Length: 202
Image 1 (tube, rainbow, N blue to C red):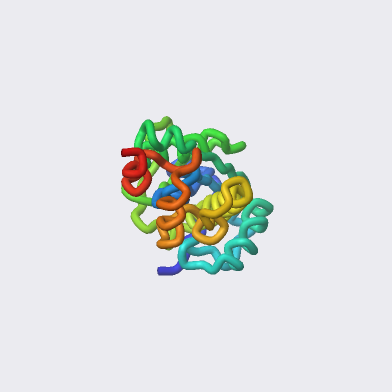
Image 2: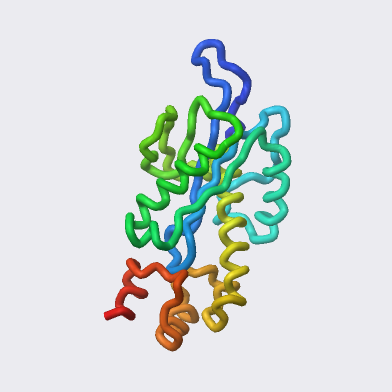
């Protein structure tokens, strides 16, 4: 399905002017925060190459990251901490990160499109769109911002917590990561509520 560049001009019939796309990155890893991004695109400056961040190469994502930030009408990146993930569960922490991202936009959106099947509880008119990062340009842009920001943040932690291979797997439960956890034990950035980590505390 072709990408949809959402209009940001005032629709006289609906009153909708600014539409934000929202997505998160980092629900599956065993370590690190979950990150969400919100983006309001500028229809006068369409961005070529937008797509689901998971289907783009790392090089493509890194190239699009500054372009999105420069050409979007507004963008915001927010997160929920490891402690919040363990206390709330990963779904609620992801929704919290999304809410923080939208709340931090410099432009208040009239409508928010959220990737997935559930929207946070908030004051915005919104719609959840399954696989929205492959259908809606603003969600695709948000998915790229969230993914690149989180990957870079986890990579920076590699020198603080050496031996786990964080720069390579970004916290996901690869064999190398699981072996390191068994050998070295969990760090403060590991999610204690996730099964593979929780069993090490038994």
